[in-house]
Length: 361
Image: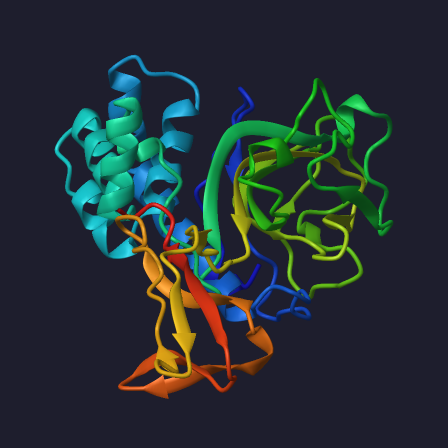
């Protein structure tokens, strides 16, 4: 992670006293192929801002008897699904309850009104549960909050990560850990993750023999980095939150440390690459046929109208009879007329291809 966008707000699933990690230096490693570097940088900055906003309400949540991290993950998910320009509405909330409501409003504002209406009409549920918006091929990475999931815990699988040895893990698989952790099942469709939001903890309990300033690096498998994800020292337990990018070809990430380390990685959100939203299309039946002959050589067999909410994007025509002598389309007065050049007659008919943007009426 770039030192300029390092995240200092740890979100730990562990019931431990954790410190705050500091990035090692300002240099940046090679960009991950398949993930736009500027989009990833914006995602890092937005997540840092969301964590900062949520962190303001730790004391209030504790005062109201709310324990654990579920509330934090929910609020982060709401903020990341909405526009960063709306974050101040949460920061200025007077209470924890108001902050939760404001964060839901931020998420709701990021969902097209028609999708909100359709979802509420169909299920009566909160629109905050609806997948956010329509896709685009050119916008930023799309954040998908998931049920918090531990994807790596080297304490459960044997010795620590050895000094200087690169260990590679598959995102979405139970690499080394306790219990099942199915991340990819929570991602809409079959879309692979481009990166994921994680809380990484280094547990150095009982591990000594090295100096302060040791570091942990996490980066896409097959790549490298010149920065640390976090720094640590002997006998420490320390956590840091941030974004981990993946190798887009195989969904893998690598971990390397400058000293023996027990590493725990908890995942609470996934970034998927932006995708265009496919049109939803249907085709009508053929409409009423017309007859073309030596007297009426030109004509346009109108197709049936498209269903409500759909737009006609193409016309498909069919000729029955002396079809070899039909020329189509012949553009007359802006319409695709058909012309008959034969000496007998032919019946012609049309049907329409109709499309709409999904989620809109």
